[in-house]
View 1: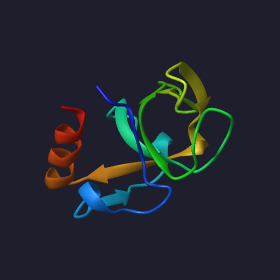
View 2: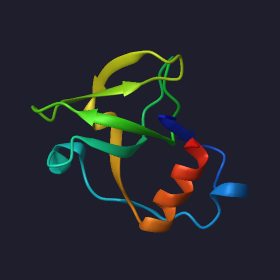
View 3: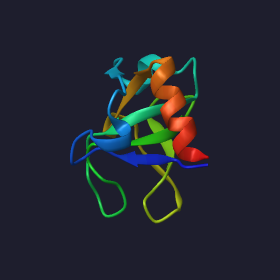
Amino acid sequence: MRKSYDFSKGVRGKFVGMKLEIVGAVEENLANPNIWAVCIHEDKSLVRLKIYLIECKPNGKSVVVIDDNGELVNRPSEWFLPLSINQSTSLILQKLEG
C-alpha cells in the first residue's frame, strides 16, 4: 500500500478532480488514528506539501509516518495538517494504490 503522494508541484493528470480539505491540527483529530495529512515541514526524509498517511500518537504531540526512504519515523505532529478526503478522492487514491 502506498503511504504518500507528492503534490508539491501542483495537482494535475490523474489527480485532477481530487478534493482535499485541511481540517485543523493533528491534536484535534485523534479520534481517527490513521489519517492522510499534508506535510508542512521539510527535512532530509520528508517533502513539504506532500501528503502522507500518518498514525497519530495518543498524546497528540507526535505522529508515525513512513518517510521517503521507506523508514518508519516519529515526527512532531505540528509538521502535518490533517486532510478531509471526500469519497471520489478516496476512490482515486485506492486506484493509485492498486
